[in-house]
Image 1 (spheres, one colour):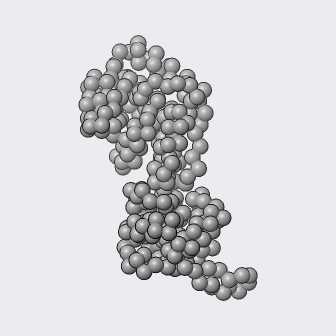
Image 2 (cartoon, helix red, strand yellow; image 1 turned 90 degrees about the horizontal axis):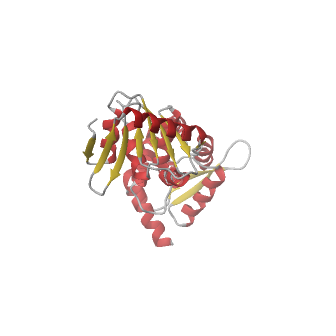
Amino acid sequence: MQPTRIEKNVADVCRAVLDGDTEELLIVGPSPTVIDGLVAVLSEPESASTVRLLATESVLKETVSGFTDASTVADLVADEVLSLRTSAERLGGPLLLTDERVVSLVVTDERTAGLATEDAEFVGAARNEYANRWTDAEPFTLRTPPLSRVRETLETEFGAELAADFEAMRVALAESAGDLDVVDVSLLAAARNEALLYDISTWGENVGVASRATFSRKKTRLEEAGLVETEKVPIDVGRPRLRLLLGDERLREADASEMVRVAAELLAVEA
């Protein structure tokens, strides 16, 4: 990497650092924007590096506040590509540290610069300093399941069509400003495919998306707003179970990728 490298975005600078001869990168004091760029690079199929990331708890919580971001990070953690720790101390940065260089990131609205030094004495001192901080820091625990697990279990439990509908809605959800979350789109995907509430809520609890109680509460909200309907399905033993159905004609006519927008508009009218 050149001593100073100016790129279009954070991801390009991170890629340039990771494309070097380093196998492990230590990142200290990143902002959510820096973490987003890093995650984008680590998610690329050709990425072979591992990263230790030390940040404040507030930054990590902001980064994983949305389901897609959190579940993508969870995949990297599960694959042992990314490790997360939090520090209560004030952190300088953002800094990217390899065995041979220290890179300071300067991020603007239009460009990102990586200002690097390869002075061996300085790099060694910086590595020791922040390696010690890493050792003293607390692990950051993610409560969101890995996205790959969500996809795989959905297809196994409900089939490819429901899984594809969920995926289309999940992508739309990440770009939506509406009052919907991953439980809502799970229920809408289930209703589009006429699955049972019991089955989708049990799946959600088992995989770690949300509790069955949360699914039930969200179902009630969607039902009261007219987005979903239910019909009773008798079973051999016990109370009948509820089959989920789409309750509004506009949702029934929408493609899966459009359903988040339509549902958000319908909920806004009801609010």
